[in-house]
Length: 333
Ligand code: UDP
Image 1 (cartoon, rainbow, N blue to C red):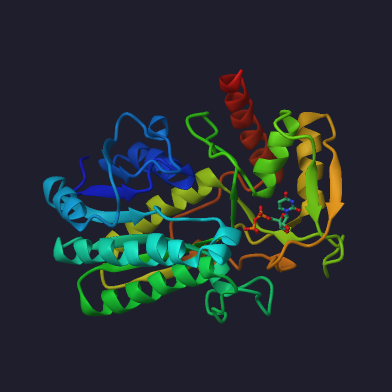
Image 2 (spheres, rainbow, N blue to C red; image 1 turned 135 degrees about the vertical axis):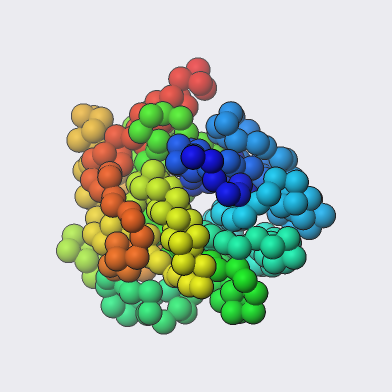
C-alpha cells in the first residue's frame, strides 16, 4: 500500500541515517535524502531513495524539497557528532546542530510538515545520578555537543506546542554494528568509538586499542556503556514515525538502548571471541569527560513503540561491525 506522504531524511548518507533509510524503504516509505556529503558517502544511499546534495541550513532548498516531494515527515540525522571537537570548536556545534536544526524546523513548519524525528543523545544527561537513566532524569550536559542537541529538543517542545507538528526526540546510547545484509556500515575515517576502533585494530588498520581508564567505579574498573545495534536503532525510527502518525497530538522523548551495560573489557573480549585473535590492549588514563557508566532505562520505548530489539547481543553487534570492517579493508587494498 502506498503511503500518504514522503519522508525527508537529512544526513541519510551517514552512518545511522543510511541504515534508517534502508529501514524506511524496506517498510514501504518513499524517501528523499538531503546530505552535504561532508562526512557521509553517496554510495551509502540506497538506490530506491531520491538524493539531494545540499545543506540543512539552506531554507530555500529545504522548502523546495518539502513542496516538490509531498514531505509529511522529517527524520533529522544531519549534524556534527564528535564530543571532543565540540569542546574545541563549539561554534561549529551550535551552527551545525542547533542553528541548522532551527532553520530546518522553520521550513518544516512553514511547509506544513506534520511529524519530526530528531537524533538526540544520551549526552543530554551529562553524568547521570542514577543508572539506568530514565528520560525524566535531569538534563545537564557536560559538553557543547550535548548542549547543542538539548537546545534542539527544547525548540521542538516549544514548536510542537505552537504548531501542528508532533515530534520524537530519540536519545541514542552507544550505537554500533552494521547492516546484517552488508548494505551499509560505519565508514568515516578517524574513528573514536570503541567498537569501531577495535574492529579497525582487528583488521590491521591500527596496532592496538587503548583502554581509557581502569579505575572507574564499575565491576572491572573500565567504562560501562549500553551498546545498541544500528539496525535496531533504525527500526526504532520507523516505529517512532508510525507512532507519530497514529497519534498526531503527542510527542515523545525516548531513550534508545537495550538497558544493559558492557564494560570496555567485556567489549574487547567479544571482539577477541569473534576474531579468534586477541588484539593488543594498552591501558591509558581516563579520557576527559567520560562518565563511568551510561545505561538506558528503555522501558518507555518498549512500552510506547511497536519495537522489539532483534540484535540485542554484543557478539552479534561486534560480528556485524567486523564483517563491514573487512569489506572496507578489501576496498582499501
Ligand atoms: N573507549 C576506550 N578506548 C577507545 C575508545 C573508547 O577505552 O579507543 C571507552 C570510553 O572511555 C568509554 C567507552 O569506551 O568508556 C565508549 O566510548 P565511545 O567513544 O565508544 O563512546 P561514548 O560513550 O564516549 O559516546
